[in-house]
Amino acid sequence: MNLHFHMLFLDGVGIGKNDPAVNPFFAARLPGLRSLASGALPSLRRRCHAEGTSTLLALDATLGVEGLPQSGTGQTALFTGINAPRLIGRHFGPHPSSSLRPAIEEHNVFRRLHQRGRRCCFANAFPQRFFDYVQLHPTRLTVTTLSCISAGVPLLRAGDLAAGRGISADLTNAGWHGLGHPEMTVIDPAEAGRRLVRLTKHFDFVLFEYWKTDHAGHSLRMSEAIDVLEKFDVMLVAILEGIDRRETLLVVTNDHGNIEDMSVKTHTRNPVPAYLYGHRQEEFREQLLGRSRSDLCSVTPAILHMFTPV
Image (cartoon, rainbow, N blue to C red):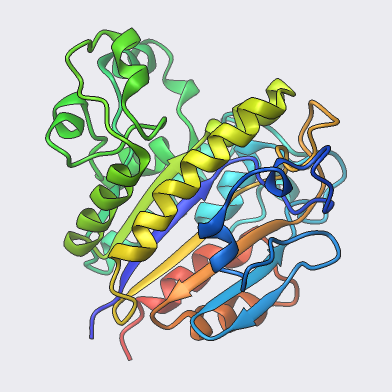
């Protein structure tokens, strides 16, 4: 049976203390994430779990380099398998440095899956303002958008979002009204989850990037952090209810910590969670654990392994 790989990139989420005063994961209602770890969320004292069809692992985001992990290098490591901070000698972000662009363009997971004949989709839809901005500032592309452009994976637009073929970064489309698209229909996060399930049925690899968690972590507003986590979880529940786990592997992970410690405005050195659920999750887990250390660089090689012909 063919594999459909569904990846949720939950930006700025590490594994922190079991303390609702500083960690919104333990203050929010998150039945979806809890269901992926037998009812208990990850903490620094409970980093891993494996039972039945789901697994929780902790991935190192520091990659053996001093300093706080950053998005440019962390996402490069996550989506290429290359230790980007070691390559350039430091953590760097939020966008990738110019020295990393050739590696991203050549080795990103979209490009390598396309070379194997796999159908890929970056589910985030972008307003026209984004395309106008990056035309003037091409160095401001994120790792994910640069990867798609170099791999020939189309970036989705307002028309795709309106037709239900894409997902807004805020899940509900509400933010598009202030981006020059007042006609965009507002949906609830559960509908966003159902749309992602439909996309997964038409592609081999689907990625959705939720950056609101990282933004909320930097805000130091606990109410905002709880809100963005609960919206994500509503979407996640709809995904778990809709996917066929006999043919779909769901992976939820990210590039660095932040929101799990609202006592600081910066990123953290905490490990990041990797939730695995569904088809062949045990095999994917073994690929992540089979390296000398389980870190961000393990993810893309594990994805490529899952699509390697037997």
